[in-house]
Length: 161
Length: 155
Image 1 (cartoon, rainbow over the protein chains, first blue to last red):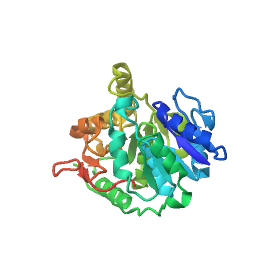
Image 2: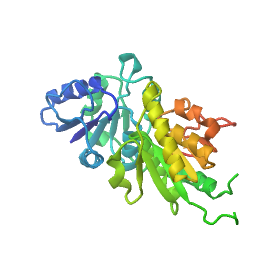
Image 3: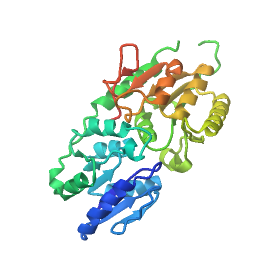
Image 4: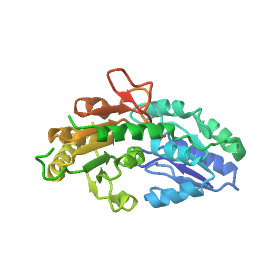
């Protein structure tokens, strides 16, 4: 199953359309879309508008690949769990977000193992056509997390003032 | 310290729902042994963090003046009522007010700017600077010698 998620806040019709177009040409593929407030309703995918956290987690776990806007929640979970991820950042020029911070975020993560960043429907289709084995993921080192937790613990233990 | 009857270990961990929340939760282990209270924008997460208490505030962005006012009022009330000794947030607007009011009552405050801000601090993250005792970015490229500081990241 391919799990597509656009987050809760803003519609992302360009991503929904791109995924649905790909699904139309791949009738064997099982695609599930979390639509949010997108106006488009997919014709070749299963979908829901919103999920509660447990449903989202179940869909995420079942998925062999995840397609997403450049939302940090999804990126963190995918990296943490070694889930192959295709990211299409929202563009301010198309009214998909207030600014282009998703482009900057996606650019920073594009070299991480198991992550692909695409700009448009053609790029998305190319990535979805890749065999799953092309997505090399790896166990994340948690060095950065350990360091940040250490800094916070140190601050909490230091005398106030 | 000797004059105090009881040193409260209460911490407010504050984030709006979504990516900010996911990042906040990854930092929770640093607060082990403390009296952790979550402050967020949806009750959906109660199950996830139980038995830790969850306080709900309205979400708002900078374009929603009335909602910002509601959010500020609610956060001020919660701060005065529960008097946290430590306040930490990953963003966004709820965290800004939580640190501002936390500072007002003498709490120690931590801001960890979201990973979503890879080029500069978020709007809330920049504005919160005077109220943040520990003012962090998760990108070395955004850090500067005078802050924000880079100490690591949630991933």
